[in-house]
Image (cartoon, one colour):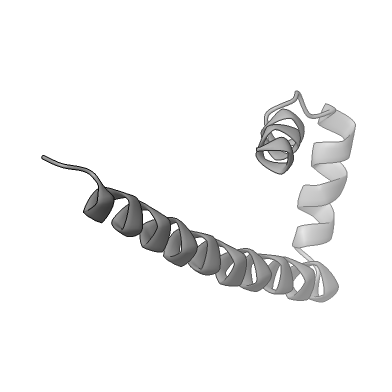
Length: 67
């Protein structure tokens, strides 16, 4: 739970407009596009693993409860 709260706090805090403009400009470059592709590929891999783990835990817990 600690990591998700830290992530959400960071992900949803206000972004400095100057930093955002720099990121957008960098994202238009070949290096920026390669970095974004790598970041999103890594995020997808982690998200799929977390979703799989969460589904497995929920499935296990739901078998143990009476309806």
